[in-house]
Length: 368
Image 1 (cartoon, rainbow, N blue to C red):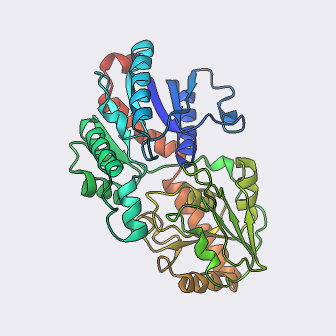
Image 2 (cartoon, helix red, strand yellow; image 1 turned 90 degrees about the horizontal axis):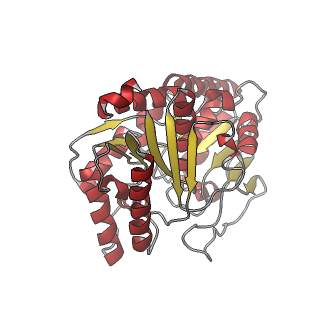
């Protein structure tokens, strides 16, 4: 089967795409991959080495959630239409809503990774203010979802949010995201360090909650501090206590080492449709301390310790409970590892997508 896949290079969608495309190609499928948002670095595309059945087309078109993206979205849609006519894929797998409405007769899967309205609601507890841009954004998201052949969300919560804000879908399903367990090391000795990974400027990730008050034990916050759509905007830290370290964004090898040594992972998000970083921490056998939000409850109930959402005192109490009790820390790490192995592997994710593809693709594509 030949699948055209779209991605962006600015966050977790790129990691998701890596897992998806790698597994598809290794299982014998042909993939044409198109990326948006920014031209990736050499380190970002290293995973493509040796994937002979992959045709990669990087672009720097803006993403639909960026301000003033209207012209770029139309231009990128025209680019995709030409590429579809040239490459003639059997199926389209889009990680952007806009392309669900692209004018072609190829089946279109749209994956709802996240959206602006549900992000705003989770962070600000109210609908976003009406603007001309927001009106355009809601229109194109609704159109893309309604005209897609089918819609996939990484959690039930995210699927519910999509239908709440953009209308009932004619065809939809949940397929959990996944990571390859072999990339992570759960077997080396753990330190008592708490680590979190996330965009420091993103209120949805809410990593600054760890700075609101003194937290027990050493804490490492790792992530990008510059907003991709606001050139002069960067995260401004509050008081940095002696036990807190702010680390720049790390490459995969560094992240693997950081998680392998950490005993605890703090999943602080107010908004998280799925969350690959907690999965990576679980594959590294970190105890998961998670914000009590619906998506984390759905995914990690019974395998994490929860604290009250956006409550730094509750977070400190939860961290204290595992900092002082090594046995609890180890048992929670084992529970997280078991859940990740059972539910959130890349093989399991791709099996779900392959089952979906087989229902949508033309018969001749399945026999090729």
